[in-house]
Image 1: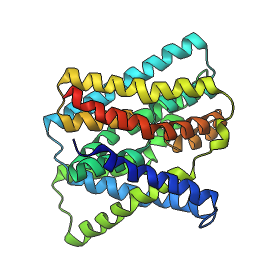
Image 2: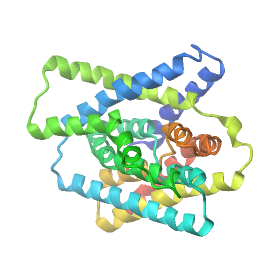
Image 3: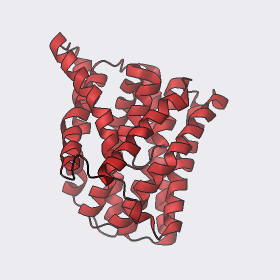
Image 4: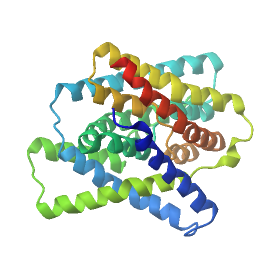
Length: 304
């Protein structure tokens, strides 16, 4: 495996830099929402489209990776459902626990995979995202509206409007149709892709809210243990039992060991969930992931 620390420290350094830039109000508070929207709607979709349009989508390893990723996500949600029935969490908090346990930070994941495995790894990760992002969106909405029957619009709209899902579908369609990108288009997509991940990581840091960590220690700790320890253990066990190749195993484990994404805060607030707890979950998991991700990646050598 490539040097893990060499791959990880620049990624988390950008997150820390984004946080301190926001604290110092540079280049200004109005910058960060615009930068996040630019990345989410333009730069990041370009990265996903480009990598999926170039990927070998018919390999057996890719099919196994996709199947195991879906299986781990469904098992994780079933565990959360069992806990919800036992503790009788209302939707406002169950939605937080579901997103804190299952939603992952795609910017962070792709930056790590790209640093470790380059273009081929990014293509595998993008294909996995095309499968997992719609499912985790459905699980999140169902959890936040627990006790109420969510409308079809609430379930479908976040998926059909998600630019990441649309970019993945378009990239896969271009790949399977045999469409070749003209030289100028390929260069443009590469330049947009190169911009996306550094800007995304800076925005992740700028979105952190350390003040929300005061209080509610138990739910924060339980959610962090589930997301950063139990879910990656489930992924690594599934990959080992299925005999998944080493690179695919690492990508699977990385995405199930990632902290919760800042976008979870937006959805929680929109659907009336406990947004303060959600912000605390995101902040704590992002801080702890610098350690837990390193440990998981080093531990992979014992399963290969």
